[in-house]
Every structure is written in C-alpha cells, then in structure tokens.
Length: 161
Image 1 (tube, rainbow, N blue to C red):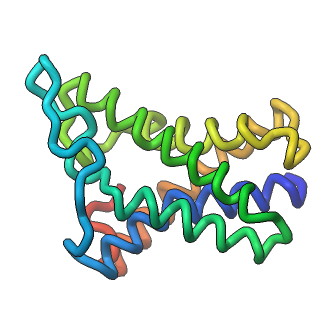
Image 2 (image 1 turned 90 degrees about the vertical axis):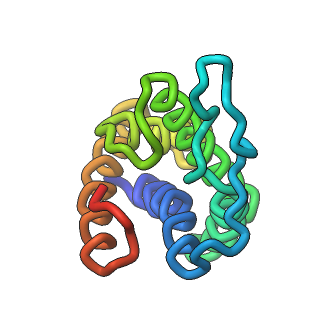
C-alpha cells in the first residue's frame, strides 16, 4: 500500500470513528436523529435513531481538520467524510429495509459502503488504481473489526462491532 492509500485510509477511519467518539464524549447531548424518527410505509425507520446530526456534523468537521496532519486540504476532508457518511447512511437504510435493528451487526454491509464510496470519490486525488481501492476496502474491513473490539473493551463502544 502506497502513502496515498494510507492517507486516505486514515481519513476514512477518522470519518467513521468520529461519531463513535463524539457519542462517548457527549452522551445524549445534541443526539438528534437525522431521519427525525421518520417511519416509512413499511412501518420501519428510515435510518434509525443511531444516525444523528451530531455524528454527521462531527465527522465532517473532525475529518476536515484531520487533513492538515497529512498535507491535504479541508475540502478533501469534507469529501472523505461525506462519502463515508453517505455509505454509513446507505447501510443503515438497507439494514432497516431488511428488518435489522439499529446497531445490528452486518459484516461487509457495515464496512464496504463506508470505505468504497470515499475511495471512489477521491481515487484521482489520491492516485488510486482499482486494485488499490480493493486493498483499501479490505484493509478498512479488517481495521474496523479490530478497532471496534478494542473500543468496546475500552468502554467507548456499546457493542464489540
């Protein structure tokens, strides 16, 4: 993996980890659901209460500020976080349609969109080939599983996944 891929992987981890850390630090403060608790005609939530404006805005801000550590600009951070959060919201939407509750484990569905969408959005910025993107998504998948367990053991995550 080249330096560009590590840089993007770092930003994707920041984008996906920021909402978790903010929930831990802020508890229920500013925890307003993105879907405003909307139910669709199937009677299921659009996204679920775990997807909050605090997490979305925090991811956008923290990821954008983190770009300074790797020599990228603020807009790059916005794009990474936007792509990661779109992937996360897409996963939640699909999980609700499949009848899965918020925070239910869904390997691959929980990781692939969150890493693939920002990688595709920024493949030219980070000079990534399709092979590099596949490697990045696989690396994110493994790191997400390991870091989730670690954050659970530290009491930061509510579940080990």
